[in-house]
Image (cartoon, rainbow, N blue to C red):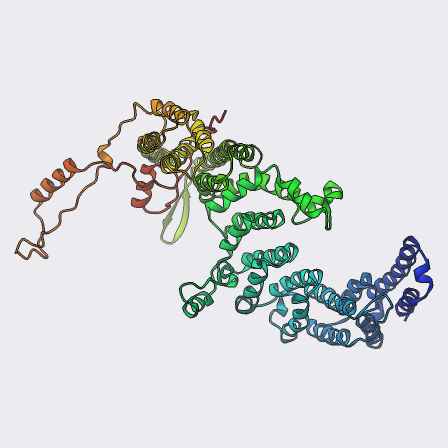
Length: 635
């Protein structure tokens, strides 16, 4: 009974006339003393042997139930009371049943009266108390209670908070819903909770804090359920019922598309949350998209993001006045995001060859996104934005540096692995079902020589393109496509041409096929642009590529022999004689011409891609021959 007596004392103090006469420090001191006494009594009862006796346990549960069912109970005691009730129950199902009854009592409690609270405030207090109890309960129970009937019934107590008119209640309601979804099966999440969370996260009219919590909940669910990243099946029904002009609902679009929209949002709070979610899903391997990486690069190099975020939040809950250590811990902080991205890019590039390829492939989307943002700006404003928010030269250089650093790390790991394998000079042989181990130095030496010859042959066949070369191809292709258009500002075209003209490429060490592709793109870029400084910068690289041949017999097109459908003779099923086939192939080779701008591979050399298509086994490239730290000279 001692906790209840102290709580009664605290409630009487809050309702007394002396409450208004005291200052805030005296009120806080008195409440802290009473709360401290109540918490210590609850902890003592929880850890004592009283709960082992059935009568004492039931009496303790009745006290905790009375405390939780009263709206006047201080919020500081809710967590301790819920955890004490969980410890007093033998089974989790019984604990959930008791909590369900407490929630009903909270909704029916009409004893909470105060002169400073109106009816709307009482409703908010009731909803916040339900959220507080449910949040602690959902954190306390185990995964074995997934889809329990009593647990499913908790949603009817939670739904009013999610649809509340008060933004704070909605925000905490969405946070509690995210915990509730983690304890629900996949079918229920996909059918009921995913559309709800997608609608909240994509709502333009919703507050940033509520949208952020819904997006974080979707991210957590995407790490558990792969179907969360797929568009909803209801999108087809909506399009059929609404016609061609129907805009698909927010709940039916893929989560990746929503992230792309949020990454380009005008409000920095949404951009920061979307960037953190994107980095988490990319690193976990749930998403693979160079465009997402390009958006993260833009955010990482935006020096105005912190100041813009501070200006947005200074009128509300300004978190930037706290200590720097506290700022970093809070989700949505630009300081936290900058630290995360500084670790994300090298870690992501080193995680796998696919990730490193995506990092290199982000140069193309990066050029396009910056161009779209600069379009329509005045020259003075655009140049200022390129310095403060979108320093394209530094971003391209950073991508090349990060990719080369990851390749260097992969090469070191591969060399260590090869040395370790070469130390094993034991060959296992099997005779009559029994394994015997023989030391055969001759066989081991022969196997090592064969393996070394295979590696040397592979190195000769596959020459991995350097990051500088790949970035130059992307820039040259962009200049060839956008140079003659009015969409790209002149100062932006000049900046890219300057990067291209100062690129340091080792002609002798690169794959000739990739060099021919670069030369083709550079030639097209030179013809597509008529600006003097731009053409001058492009010609610097063109002079470097002047010794690269324009034609290769290995890349000539082979025209297949086809039957003439109009010759009057039925040749179906007839085989072409060997001599005629050779003659036809020779004629085709003589008449074939190289494409002006052949279809470019996403990353790597043409020989590398040809080997992947024809070889069995591992279809991923190796990074042994990528030039190390071939940075773009941007200055």
